[in-house]
Every structure is written in structure tokens, then in C-alpha cells.
Length: 144
Image 1: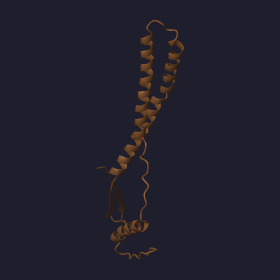
Image 2: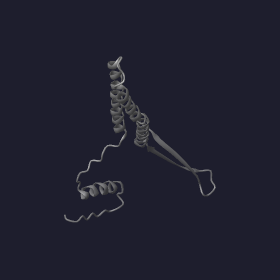
Image 3: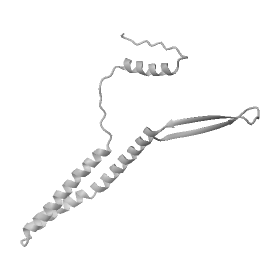
């Protein structure tokens, strides 16, 4: 767990040596984890972008070499075809892996579903009401 602890010291107004202390402890574990996840997602996006940048020119060059020189090469033609096909296939495989890596970095798509707003308001106001017994709450919802 990660906690943020703050201590505030107040001297008394009458000049006495008495001091008041206010100590606040906030559990920021979820916040730190969210920041860490966001940072890793950003790193993943950047890495994916940098890897993908040279892939298209590499693939286009291999295809162009195969088209242009494939007819001219008579000796070791099979090796030439195998090598250019390997380059093209491997570039496509890397491209797919980068796409999957990029998908990991993206936030999941929101899941839209209908909810009862009155129930959400009841839950939220109940939590406040429980924590503030000095306040009387009156809830009025339409269509009930």
C-alpha cells in the first residue's frame, strides 16, 4: 500500500508553547497504480509507433526488389524468392505483433448499458447520509 502522510502544526493564538497537530493519512495506492498503468500504456504506444515506422518501407522495398530483379536473376532464383518472401512475411508478422502490443496500450472500449439513475442517486445520498448523521435528507424522485 502507498500512503500520503501530511502533518500540519499550528501554534496557539495566545502565544503559549502549546501546539496543535493535524495528521492526515491518504491511501493513494490506487492513484499510484493508475499513474503507473498510464505511463506503461504511453511507453507501449511509443514503442509500437517506433517499431512500426520502418516496417512499411522495408516491406515495400522487399516487394520492389522481388518484382524488379526476380525476372533478371537466373542463378539461385529459388534462394532469392525464398529470401524476399521471408522478409515480407516477417515484416507482416512484426506488424501484427505491434498491432497487438498497441491494442494492449489502449484503454478498453467503454461498455454502455442502461442504469437506473434513481438507484444511483439513492446509493450516493445514502453514503453521504450515513457519514453525516447531523443532516436530515429528503429524497424525492419523479415517477415513483
